[in-house]
Image (tube, rainbow, N blue to C red; front, side):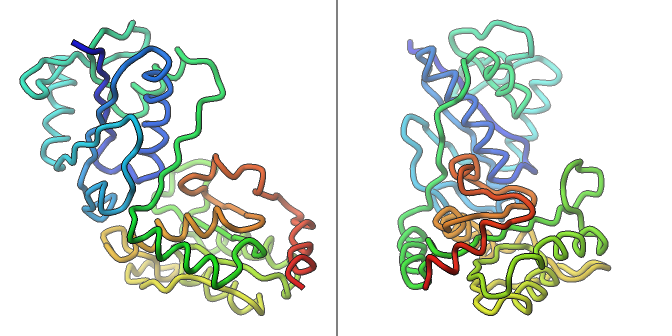
Length: 283
């Protein structure tokens, strides 16, 4: 019987969280000869999408779509008994400090982090690639808008106020981000990816050549309107935005995005003086 690690993330984990977990698990598995199966939660955190309806297959990983109820049951059994039954086989949950068995279960970032400590860094990249229909749309948009000569701007405004080192849905924080971006010349061509209608509107007003994918901002808070987490169309748009951002010549990121580890060499920091070179390249 082959060695196996089964992994799953919490039901509320977004796609970036899930792929980070999987990258750590797969780095361990590839080095030590384990097969990998991932339980993909079809939950509100991913607008109830099955993996194959958003992403292409992942080489070396078997994905099983799993309901919120199944994830809750797994969490319950693991917390109470330290294991759960998977396809008729009891699998022990790996705990920090334990030695992995021949066949075991890794829960969320706690388990994947423990496995990551057993593998030399840096880990191999794990790119989340859009499924074929979305990839076709992304490639067409990238060509039509010359994305390689644009500055990608990603601003993620977090829902929860206690998340450290993040931009929150607080007007003073959003304005601070905007003021830092206003130092970029208005003529620099940009691509904007944000979940805040206010941020998008203000950046479009500043930059003469701004592109963004259409989306609905249907979630209303005191500080404005935001993309709703349960909006299925918005989830598809986010996956396409990731492809566009990664194709940009340079990128500014507040809050991070899926696959950002693969384009670190393109990410620039304040004072963003390099951004003006994109307009020269485009001319």
